Image (cartoon, rainbow, N blue to C red; front, side):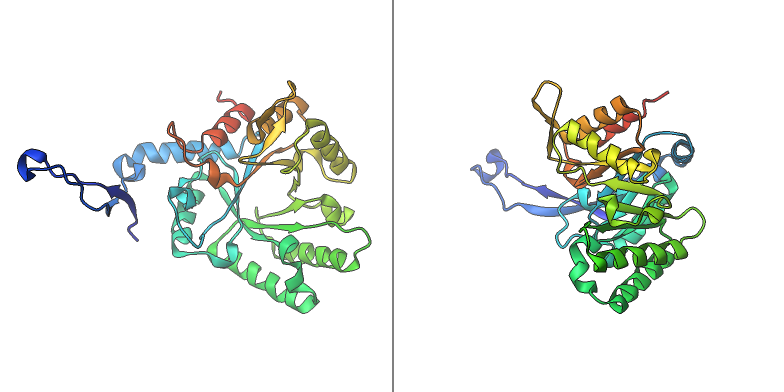
Length: 305
């Protein structure tokens, strides 16, 4: 499938020829993309091999939530193919609506060694799954989709409510079904307050993304992380979440970019597994390059040798 970028062309007639300066209506012009694997296949093969080798080294994990297949595609920020190369794991937040473009991009991400997860957003959709049979049916479809598209596992969300028997049963069922379906190197990741998951299951999760994306004080973030570890989450499987466009109060009592500052918190603590970036698409565009913050934190957390 050939894909194109679209650019807006505004043409002006030349005064000397037309006798006046007159702008035409803007129009969209499509032009084919030029890919590095087409222009220099050998160099591309060496580069992607080095990315896959990097995944196998001990390093701070960088995990990203990505809203695939949005209703309105604005630019390359909505394309998986443009994801920062050194992101380790991408969780698809619109996984129920995988598009042909997503499928096309899966191969490119696999070539780079980026793992792709199907997100089950129980936290925001719990009302749809009030009875066990509806949740089981949905989990079965998510498991089938991961198999069909060759994805690398699942992430799921949940909101802890003390004494809520329904949530506890849902948590047990979600983990049970996903863990049973998991094969080989596939992952099961939880995003949220780890208390939502039973202590026994917490220890079996591949990663827990702690819900620190709306916390703006380093002390509160580290307290929440310490509590998660005390509750049974292995420290090196704990990822701290930060949201593009948010702020964390730094050591000078000033608002600092949340993604950049969370990387500093992780480096200072030297205890946890890495960083989860939410709203990653909003970091895509900058006049100086794409995904500048994300690329910066990857370099901060995992300096080039």
